[in-house]
Length: 285
Figure 1 (tube, rainbow, N blue to C red):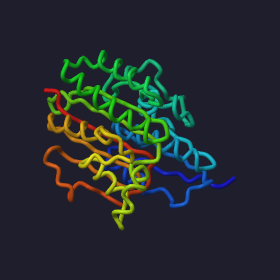
Figure 2 (tube, rainbow, N blue to C red):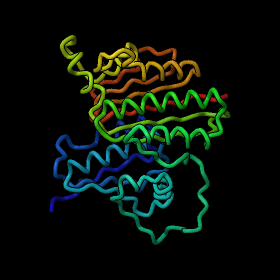
Figure 3 (cartoon, rainbow, N blue to C red):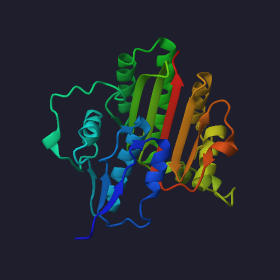
Figure 4 (cartoon, rainbow, N blue to C red):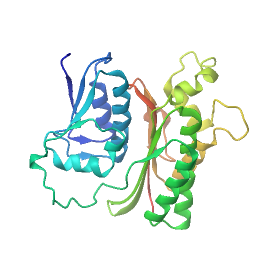
């Protein structure tokens, strides 16, 4: 059996440290046993936990084996368990000898279970569940429904794969914040738009594809009304003066809306992650 390739996950796993973590993988990982070491992790964002799920499922298809090793980090193991992470990727190691079964961890940074998206019914079920549990007013509830419906429908129609949602409402810096994370493990925006845009741009890349989808509503389909999903989402985030991030393939576009300087917030040549990941934060107050 080949020697395991162990990669240590940063102690604070946020969108920036996740990019560094992703860059640590060898270029050719096919048939290499991979261990993701979470022993030192003390904090993980909702965006990163869903990205980590996508990564684990992707690695599982490429490597001879892939596992998450918690050692005796019972706090983080409990976080992953309560997110229902193990229902979608269950290959892990954990030393349960020091696990305090009666410990009350509270609900900080734990919003809801991960909700899967595979068909249209899953979107409607997620929207209905979230509206009831997050105690939103009519306008907030409508905005959330539009965002989940539009991006969720993109997953079903364009990704050719599976998707996941996590939405939570937390108090951050004395503000009531709504956090929305929607990810998939499909072909990504770059591949989806390649046939249409690669003939126009000699330097076509994932970054160009994300920009065209975000600001011009470009879709691989020419039907009337296509490509409006991300545009509608961006408009809602703009109304709330929130933040939005779209990562797909090897590029990422993020920033405050509406003060979005494209030259400052588009990153290219990142390490590859399949599918498209959308992260949205905005204040409810």
